[in-house]
Image (tube, rainbow, N blue to C red; front, side):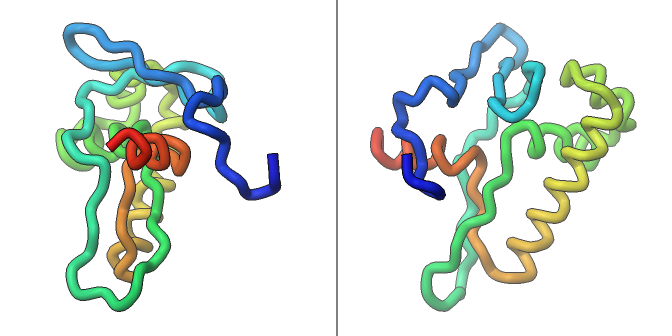
Length: 128
């Protein structure tokens, strides 16, 4: 595979979510353990209004969005969010820092936000 090229949608490195009655467990290749998501995002991204051209999107991963939802929207502590997600408090802190930075970057630079990895977005577009 060429450097910088995206793998095919059928590439086994991209894990599929497993669902249950109250949430979903996702396996993210660069993370060692599965992460529990309480809510499946109802959208795959947001596009800014009034931007010139087609800026590169910012990719917000599902676990980053879940950490931000639990702490910033539901008001849980990082420790409580970690318990719900099945990860450590330190992992929640790192997910929050990354999610907040990406969100601020997208808002301040007028860039679209995509939820998921570039490979997941490519697969969604191919299957649309």
